[in-house]
Structures are given as C-alpha cells and as structure tokens.
Amino acid sequence: MRHLYIFVTLLQTVMTFTVLPYIQIDYAHYFRLAQCLAKCMQKYGVPSTHHLLDGSIEEFLDVRNKDAEACDSGCHQHRRVHRKGQLGLTMNSITDGQRFWAESSAKSGLVGSTVISSVELICQNPSPDEEFGVSAEGFVSVSLLRPSGAIRFIVQWKQRTQVMGFYDESQWITSQWTHSRSTISIHGHDTMLTVKNGYNSDRGVTAQIEWPRTALDSCYYKLQLSNSSFQVTMDITADSSKSILLPHLEFDTLYSVTVAAISADKTKVSNPTTTNFKSLPCKDIHGRGSLQCLPEAVSDLTIVLRSNGTGLISWKPSADPQNILFYQVVYYALSYNDGCQIQKETLNVKSTETSAEVTFPGRECEYVIQLINYDLIGRDASAEVRVLIEPSLLIRFNEILPACVVFLSLSCALICFRCRKKCPHRVSEKQRKFAGYA
Image (cartoon, rainbow, N blue to C red; front, side):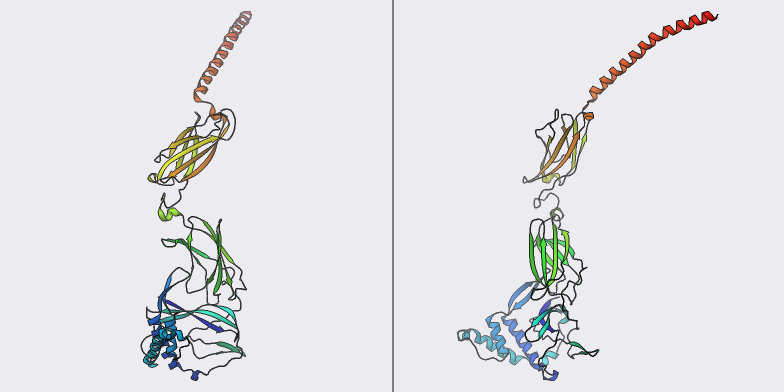
C-alpha cells in the first residue's frame, strides 16, 4: 500500500477572517483543475524517491522544474510568460496545460471508484500564523487501495467548536476531527521506547525505535544516539512510519537512545525518554569465527593444579578449529619468591587442541596465564586467569613416601626398644612376689 503525504493547517483559535459560503465554492472547477494538474505531473514529473523514517522507500513524481510549473500555469489559464528568456522553453508546456484543461470534465470526478482507502492525521503542532494567529499544523497520510498513476488531491476538513455547552461542526467532512493541543509530548512521560535489532547488506547493523503515537503527538522530534565513543543528535519529522531506523551501527555494542518532542519553531522541548540497548553480535550474522568479525577470546578458561607442580589448562573455543590459526599460552609469576618464574614463558598449541600442560616452578607464587587465539589473518583475542601456588602443593609425592617410611620405621623401632627394656623387669618382679607368697 502506497502513502502520499499532505501538509495542512488546522485552526485552533479563530480570529477575524472571511468565510466563504458552502454554495460559493466552485467544486466543478477544482475537479477539472485536479485532472489537469495530474496530467501535467504525469508528463513533466521526474521520477524520484523519498526515504521514510523506518527505512522504506516511497516513489513519487517531482514537479519542481520549469516545464511542470509552466504546465501548471496553463491549467490555471495563465497565458502570460513572465520571463522572456524562457518563452521558447516553456511555451509548449503552457500549451499542454491549456490542452489538459480543455480535455478535463467535472463529470468525470463522479465516475468510477476511488483509489483512496483512508485518510489519517499523523500528528499536529501549535504553529503561530501571521493571518490567523495561534494555529495548529498537522500532517495527513493518504492510503491508496492500489497503485495508480499521478493523482492530485483536494484536501478538505471540518471544524468542531463549542458554544454555550453545545458543539457545532462544519458540514464538509473528509476525516474524523481531533482535538488540537497547545503542548508537546511523547504520549506521556511513562512511554517506553521499544528497540528491535536487525541487519541487512545495505545498512549493516540496524535498530528500529518505536513508541506509541497518536494524532495528538508532536510532528517534530530530537533524537540522540550515543555509545562509549561517540554521540550524534538529529532532528526528526514524523511521517506515516511506525518506527525510526538507526542504520550502520557497530556489532555487539551498548547504545543509549533519547527521544524528545520539540515545537515547530524548535523553541520548546518536552521531557526526554531514554532507553539502552545492545546491538546484534557479529557471530549471529556471519557465524562463529568469520573473517568479517573480530576474533573472540576463548571462554571457560580454567586451570587444575597437580601435586607434581604442573597445571592442566583447558578452555572452550570461540570458533571452529578450521577458523583458528593456532593458540598461544603465555604465563609468568607476579611475585619474586624463591623459584618463581618471573620471565614470560610461551607455548604454542595447535588449533585442534582444547587443553595444554605447563609447569609452575617455585613456592608461594602467583601466576598469570594468558591464552591468545589467532584467526586466519593473524588477528588475536586473549583471555586471562590467575592462580596461586600454595607450598603444600609443591611437596612432591616421591618425597612424601620415603619420609613416611622412615618415620614409621623409627616409630616401630622405638616401641620395640621400650618393650624389650621394660618387660623382663616386670616378669622377675612378679616371680619374686609369687615365691614370697608361697
């Protein structure tokens, strides 16, 4: 469904002006004029496109050229060319306009079905006017039932006024009336902004910003987008789009977006509404390990210390092995205690491996272990973990076992020695007591 947009002015406060009676308006003339101007647009309009806020494209015929203006003049029966230098250039266009006017008919406006499905007031703003004082300007969206050729619209509206408790409305109705506002807002201060992430090849990483909007809302907004490294502010004019497209964002980045309504003359600003969102990660679009994405560090980097002074380093790869060039393990001690390895040690590991064994010399040492993974074009990403080597862990098993054997042997020998020394004395003493008793 195509949309055409028309700017109209809605009176909010009535001041002194001339009112034309309903019967004095020559509608037949306007029907014929619309037909004539439509033919001028079709012949002299230049195909152009207009980008809507949500990123969609609208096609239209641009009539901002001399031939189209001359044809328009012919439709109005203006036979006089003001610029002599352009006489030869525009005379044919004026003649076409006059011919289109002669071919038009007021009755044709009553024949056939309309191509318009609905007319909607998108937004409105208070707008001071030199002739009518305080007025309200608004944007009207016209929805078409089907694609059609060049179309010219006659825009009409009605006004509703209240006098002594009673409402009075004009008779010509083309759209439902709506109240005009003298304030600006984004549909209340508690309105939440909704963000939908996306991606396409033309605009890269995108986000669509939405919030509930009604015809009472402002037509003009100020939008601010920022992250940790930049900030940009832009002025937005409402159209029939339901969202605002933010293109060319960075992958996997935290953003903050703030929207505030502003008046038509940009002198008043409403309270802003802010929300934070994170853009899509690159791997969700191009896959893990893609060269179109920056390399990611491994996850779940852990170390299991062994009693023999070694440690088993294990990790979870961030990409498939075919997308990894190799791994590099770098470790060194932070402390200067006895035997600690201060100098960095490096160990290269194949891309198909998910673990490696290293030796941690010294006692009471705190080691830093870095695991660096390189992609196929040499870019790197690293993860880091620390581990503390306790003294009890540095006693080797082959040293504990002999010590235990020696300790047990000495204990047994001491017990036997004491038993041999005390037992004969007790036996002889018991024998003497038994003999004396007998």
